[in-house]
Image (cartoon, one colour):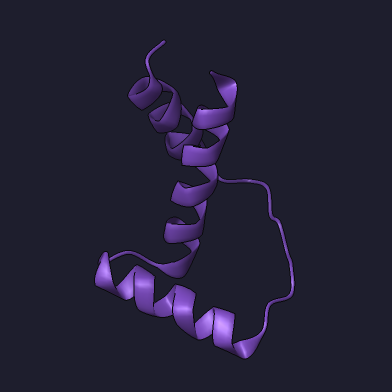
Length: 59
């Protein structure tokens, strides 16, 4: 399975699990701004970053 296929598998499954963590207001603002620049939700932006890191570590 290629990197893109693995990332798509990680991102396209049914979302049933939650990860909750605390951040500073400044970090939240930064994430929201980056997500808006990419025209995605903050949740989708964070999930994409995590999927990319999972693919990188799977090598």
